[in-house]
Length: 77
Length: 249
Image (tube, rainbow over all chains, first blue to last red; front, top):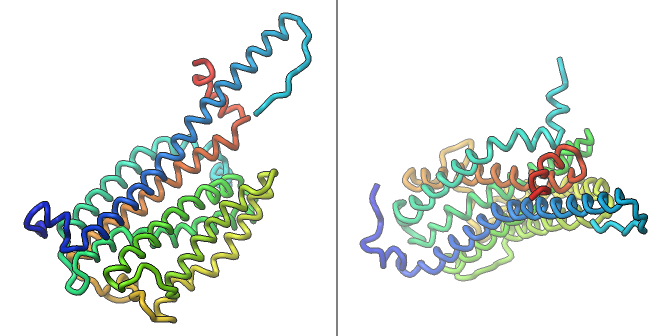
């Protein structure tokens, strides 16, 4: 098994087929990377939203404990 | 015989905890195989006698198409399990499989179009194989849209599972399209029952890429399933405990 091209330039050019081959590989890899990154970002966002909501509930509980009856605000989820 | 394993299998919590340990291995193995396959296919596999270097697109195109089809079976199968046994996790996996399948179908359509230009002289033709793959793409999008179209999550589960099941009709048509309506797309090079019509020097990098795509699929499906599980089980005790550090931060 050996490298099929004489030089780096001919590897890029691929006898004129370079643009077709490289565009295919780059686009495919971008899509694959997006498939990995998307759920990780989503999890991070969920974690952040959860943290914010917990802190809000905590703050609300504290105001309630201070016995200052206030109209309960509608919870936005 | 105890059916405990079956019930556990259906538990999102069990799945989430179990797969935590698998993820790094799946990720590392698929990245490794894909890297080896890409370098091999781009630089070391010989040129094709007829198509020259443009054929190197095969190392992306065929594995992506393989997984686009296999992924549809997985999605429809999970939909069926969910409908029959009302298994929560099964519907979650089905939902997770839809965008992944759509992405892989897109890759195989896109690389196929690019490959078509130097080989057939056109980016697009309404050939049976290509048209049925386009229908597959729309089926994936349909399952995604339908699963999110209901305010009650269970209704979305059932409706999209039904659509996924009906859509399986398309899969054997895709497989057979190159034989039934032989127009432009070449027939299968890899065969299960007889010798493949591809030289070993091109076959080994291709099979490496296919194995890499399978592992990648397993990895990404697990990732998407896990993030959907957290989204759905948001209110349960175990997710609260899992997220507790984020709440204190």
